Image (tube, rainbow over the protein chains, first blue to last red):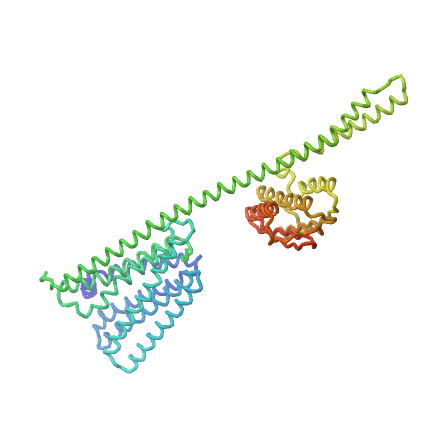
Length: 233
Length: 263
């Protein structure tokens, strides 16, 4: 138990906060999904993330970081980022009621999946350096690909004639969450390699930049679920 | 805490600026959205006021037409009957019992006819007649009046399950049909008119066909155009649409498709 708390302390308890927020988001999502099935992909994504987090704790505390752990963390981060991009793209494709935008989104998703396949081939070639490099690159590209439709969304929002308050729109909270998360995480993923994790300052930056947008993203997702309206509004 | 390297401080500043820009962007989007929402709401309000204004105009038109009809009826029939009755009574010679009896009888008949016509008029004059009796009853009264005045034969058919519609919608439909018949009377020179009301589930289709001279809808005629435009506007106000087809020398067909919520 002491080891577990030491582990949580390493991230200034950010992982514990992420865990709690994700549990709340999952509960809110499950309650919403009874009437609005479009919430199901988000719930799958959240639950998968929770399971990976618990597995990570298990590997750290019980298995004491075996040799394969680095590859596991790399691949689990990579895997969840793929799920994340696919879930959000599915959401965006359903959200935009415009065949041109939908066509472009489908094409972007195809390109992204092609990149994922390249990455998996690299992993099969057992080239760890390539794996690390491509997984980071694919994560960044995934986030950039997520950023593009969020900007489309804001344009779409401003041209929308519905008389909902913006704060009553679940889509606004979802998109703002992913916008904040993607935009704040891209710099970290790009320069994480150059930030010295050995210094206290380096650790604070990595933790703050990695977990804060992630936590905000899940809080906003929870807020979207709590609007109790179809997510496409 | 160890001293932060220079490049980390730069990085923190850049990230902070990025976050600030992001926050400003979101706030700007929200403010812009609210501004546009306010604008859209104002537009909706204006459209609502316009709708009410048009509806009032339609009501006034219906009333004006009814008053015109009443004036004509009083002048042409009732006035004539009463004048004749008065004439008969004025020239009544009680010494000639046979003549006096005939004149009295004729006067009574004329007065009875006048009373009956006044009763018919009062039924048609009531502006709430649509509210009280519904579209079908008002149409029957209207058709009866047209039959008396017009030189064409009217084949009136209804099918489906007739229902009471929204009062505003019924008034608009009535006015469109009235306008359609008005055009036939004024311009069509028709000998036969087919008037059908099809009540489908949640959809009313009104068909008005005539075998008159027809016209070229592409040819601009201000009188025709304004009448057609009025009907089109009313069809839209009633939540439906109007279709017109006409050829010179080949009659005119007017169709209104009105979705409705049964009351």
